[in-house]
Length: 334
Image 1 (cartoon, rainbow, N blue to C red):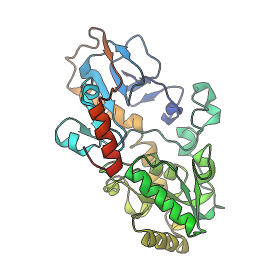
Image 2 (image 1 turned 180 degrees about the vertical axis):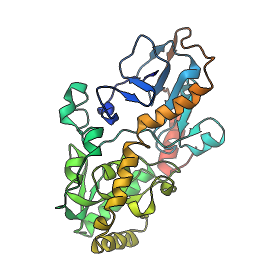
Image 3 (image 1 turned 90 degrees about the horizontal axis):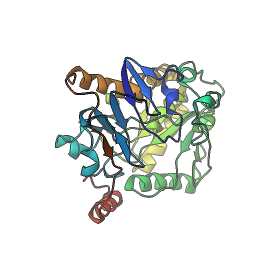
Image 4 (image 1 turned 90 degrees about the vertical axis):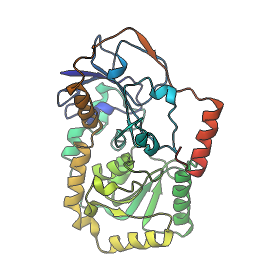
């Protein structure tokens, strides 16, 4: 069994994504969220504080969860890892990163920050709960749109502008929730009441799709989606309606049309297939296990442990901060 250590902290119970949350095992990999005496691989998404480790660089993996115009990952931070994965095109083209969709946790079925203890397993929806989740027949024949009023990036601003147009025009078949609108503790509690969900990403980037879409499928909703240009590489076209929110009138018209045609009922099988893909193939622990196994197959000569080292969180120079702000403001891929 390959031992993988993923240091915290966590704001949500990520271990609920295992078939058995009490045994954090996926394929031939066992995952640890508290540092064990020995481990084979170290996996991080980001660090909040310095991390001492004996794990050699060749067995350290970093999975980046944001596109380049949302977060800038410094060279000094990336070079502490033997392998970096993500969807930032310039770094992929330069050979500095391996192409991979974000390995993000589900948000539906738990209250952020309120139930991160393994002993709290009765307060959140688990892998098994979602696997056997039954879609309610008596759902609102409307669209649920969960968003926030953040405006840090152009993608954020496009989404907020779209939401505000809906409110201004009194579109009665779309209900808006989220911070700045109508706050919710658990997305599933709201989404499970609706047939349709608007899932709008922070921007458009190849292979960048997030829990906004995954949560829609887990909740048994038919998603109306804007974001990842190659999303059809991941899910069949009959499992969602793709829209461009920059064309407001066309998007609203398309949404009204699928409601009138009851696409929700006609797409139940497609949504069920997509949900199983979210649970298994695109489960973050499956993605991590697959990449670790690829590395492990040709890295048997690497020593399991080396001399003590310290991995440092990202530190931004004034130049980094300027470029970071520029990228966010104008949606520039650096």
